Amino acid sequence: MSMQGSSGAGTRKGPIRADAVVDTALALVNLGGLESLTMRRLSEALAVQPPALYRLFRDKDALVDAMADAVLAAALGPLPEADWETRVGVLAGRLRAAMLDQRDGARIVGGAYTTRQPTLTLADSFLAAMTEAGFTGEAAVWATSTVFSYVLGEALEQQGRTEVDLDEVQATLSAEDYPHLARSPMPALLDFDARFAFGLRMLTAGLREGARTFQPGGTGPGGEAVRAD
Image (cartoon, rainbow, N blue to C red; front, side):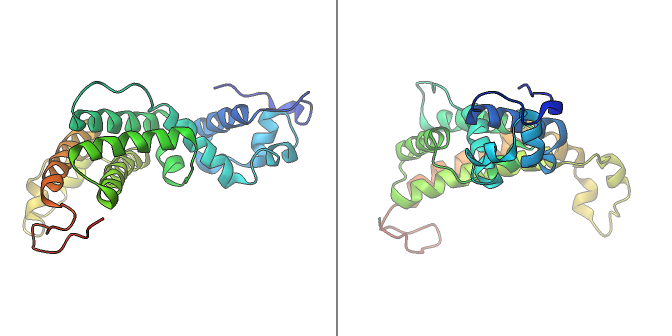
């Protein structure tokens, strides 16, 4: 992503395209974080006056929605001819990578609600896998949102982590007060790739069981009624 110099604000000739605005906004976030992005700073980077941006995006929230779609677009692509569990794993991995490749990508995606092609295509691919797993109606939507929320939460924590020496933290834990924490390998918390893979395996196993157990009109494992579609 490239940015125009800010010294010539208002000197651009010809209309500016929405995709150029989004690309520059994402580049600014890569430089200074999401908090640094303002419509004024963006207009300076693009060498246009702020009203030119508001003709394309009604406000910053609308811009962030478009930025989220640009982030999610990186997760799209042909899926392997494989079972639903494999496809969910591929989709989840691509979604995580797309958010991690952009500074504050998880915050951008998590704060957006869009109905553009990248978002809809990704959701449709997840729903297709959940339908193949045996979920229908509300359950398929909830199963999709469960996976999405897991990936988003892991990416949010990874991108928002602060420098901390977990070995030092563990050394200060009292075995009497916190026996389980004191014995646990706390540095494993920062092995984000391994913990993501572990969590996704556990989540997929739960979905596999849930597709068999929670059928419309049936009962859950505790005997509670499952609402029919």
